[in-house]
Image (cartoon, rainbow, N blue to C red; front, side, top):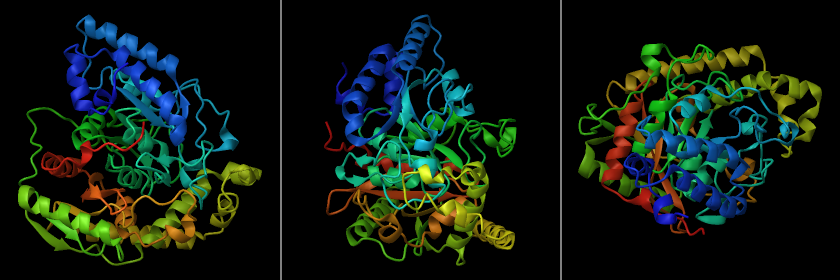
Length: 469
């Protein structure tokens, strides 16, 4: 079996070794599966492992590569997919006991894209039930139990892509697929010390994914590096007629080739002074040091401010109303009572009472914010701030009381469909990871990847390993 020195390698390096036949896709899959079977249960990281499928795909990849048919940089690379993505014939529980036995006779578009690239599916990553669509107060709101953080197993990984964060941080897979409606890629990436990309809204098809909020749901990768995220995005992006929310053919695809400029030298950086009202002191200090790295090695940094307004309220209303629509059958059936979390049992009924007037007001706020952000991006290419104002929180924390704070960065970013990436930038006094977020205008995913890539070329935080074995 391959050891941690190999299993912690980024996708980019694993890809080179597979292409040159220095690593066997079968041995790589077997090694990640063995590590996942040993460590995964300690972290509640997986909902389901798919060893038979993984080994079948790995053997096929190895055979094709030996025959000279190399499909590209994800050929033979193992991964995990959040358990709200349909995989033909396998359980897709959406993190909820009420859907524990749910299976689909088709796969999500993103799974099909990864299959065609030759990637190897190790299993389904654990998640918060219904991706938090009915609300939740505790990290234990999952059929898999509370996801434990590899850096400190007494802490949470953040939701709703809780398993995806744990899997990448603990090297149970070199990358995982997560989803974000409001924070569910950025927060787990920050809490777990990995790199996570939220693509522009509509760049990645959501066909075959559980719907939460139709106008805000996005799918993206968590991996070791920004370069890895770019490699995955190049495979999973693209127009899909099965998802009317995807961008047009010419706008949706993300291409990646050696000839394309990924330099961050020409980017104009804005440091957000109003992203968070109160950040933990050691976290804020670490983020400030990261800003100085950008200023010294990458580009000019000036102060910037997000537009003022009821962004959190608007985002909350849109998620609540669209979630109540998406889960209407569950709510009307009364089976919300079977959800794990006490808030999840009742929030759907409350959300159904939100008026159309309030929803329309929220949509108008979104329109105003989109216009103001477009104006802000006339001055800046990339906006920066700590990914979260706190580090990983205790497993037993009441999230509604202890992890509830204004989040204009997340609210505006998701309301406006903006791409963002979180990268590790240091640790707090309690040795918990800190994330730095880069956010750009809609469609400019390349800018956030270039900024993150440049930061990682001058730091090594993304190479640190948690004390898990």
